[in-house]
Image 1 (cartoon, rainbow, N blue to C red):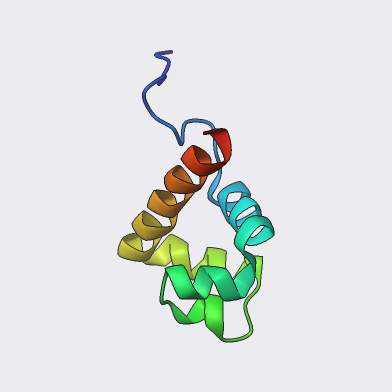
Image 2 (tube, one colour):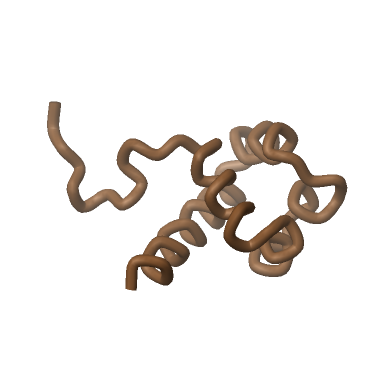
Length: 75
């Protein structure tokens, strides 16, 4: 199996990405950074996962925010 050392999301599940982002920014902060209803209207990990798995453009935004988040916390 090839390693993906240049892929910052390698080995991360969408669920873990959401858990980490929500813990750091909170739902309100996520809703401010990414304007999608699943972060603003009665948010939960379960409902957000359901939406993001069906909506590639939104998932791309969440993954991009996670990469930015990782750079912020790791310096």
